[in-house]
Image 1 (tube, rainbow, N blue to C red):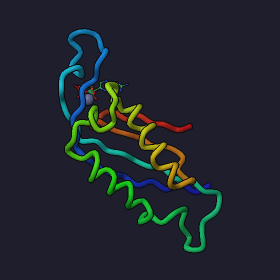
Image 2 (tube, rainbow, N blue to C red):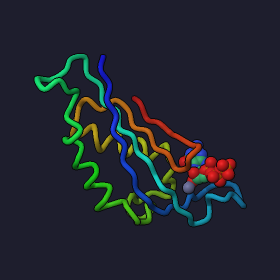
Image 3 (tube, protein in one colour):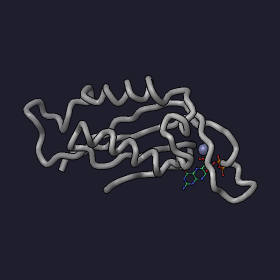
Image 4 (cartoon, protein in one colour):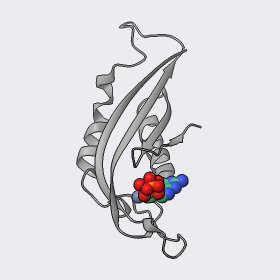
Length: 118
Ligand SMILES: Nc1nc2c(c(=O)[nH]1)N=C([C@H](O)[C@H](O)COP(=O)(O)OP(=O)(O)OP(=O)(O)O)CN2
Ligand SMILES: [Zn+2]
């Protein structure tokens, strides 16, 4: 099995609702997000690729146009924009375009990662 990954970066704000009183993430704040998309294939294509990294350019466009420097609660219509839910959001978005997508990881801080892998 072959695996490739590509990383995408953006900055955005969010606010998590429904957390215990005083939780720091209930306040409006922002992160420098990192998204890592993983793709898998048993066999390589005629070019020796799982898939050309270049094919993932639409995800960069989506991130730059729709998410970068925006308020994620508004854009995604979600009051629980956690890293876990972001990972699932990106997985669904990518999977609709590229069947080789096997997992997506999202980092909000240098020390945290959440992954969605069906
Ligand atoms: N399982 C999850 N827990 C938390 C999430 C999340 O998406 N999934 N999100 C947050 C906050 O939005 C934010 O990411 C803060 O994370 P935290 O690690 O608490 O950040 P800090 O930099 O303040 O942590 P230090 O302990 O100071 O390193 C919270 N939890
Ligand atoms: Zn946060």
